[in-house]
Length: 374
Image (cartoon, rainbow, N blue to C red; front, top):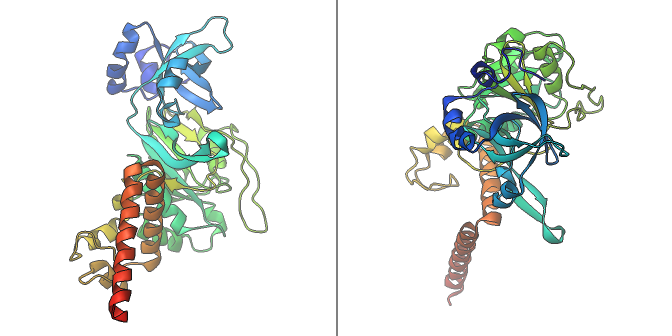
């Protein structure tokens, strides 16, 4: 795919793909070494499709880049700007020598096979250099506020502005009620009801799409992400499929992440549906759960666990109905997942966790001995 807005190789062409002044500054040492720049359109099992000044080309990463990477998250991902060297007569057109610094990245916790068949925790970069995250949910039987909270937290933690798109509005009897419910858990986040199939509400989506800016479409299978992408781009570029009638759950039709250029000059990354979503860190939790964070600031103790401590403002807000218990429970679950992931990868966090439980068990044993008169 070529960018329809300008001629390849020009400054306008680079800007059309999202190139910024910070990218130009970071690229200077690579330009001095005779390398060229490109943006990653597709990553599939270590092979890359790149948007270059010479058109679309295939690429692979150099042995040095593979060796120096401390984690697979340092490999190129869709949306990355890379420095490459042309390879005449090779299996791929280019060799990627470096990945330019990312201004943002959509990262989730994942696992991969390690030595001996064991699963190792890693951070998976879903996309890089993203400005807007379209979080798509379907207004049918598979609608979940708790899942939306996770996606909003993922966007905030990635340094990306979330926008919730409630798709399949034509299948919902009370759209305004669903919008109000989402606005209560996605505080300060734009919420739009659309029907991608019937192209209703796409004008409100287009407001968030600006030339040279990159958006990503996130959501579970069957919510209509590919249908939305096709509607925005104005042609059938992504396969679509029906949902299962038994439970309204969707089937995977997108098998890889891909960066696309929209007719108006904006850029859009389509993604496969995520079967599970665990956050890699908790940086976005205060923004995603701002109502709970604001109440918790009034707790007597700064490390209050909101589990019965005296002077707990969160517990008081739960009792008088200002906070939703299910929302607090979801926050706790996400925090526990992040802590568990950190313990698996960080020896210090693992040691602190073990020391904490040793103190808890020692205190419990002391109480038992005191009660028994020992």
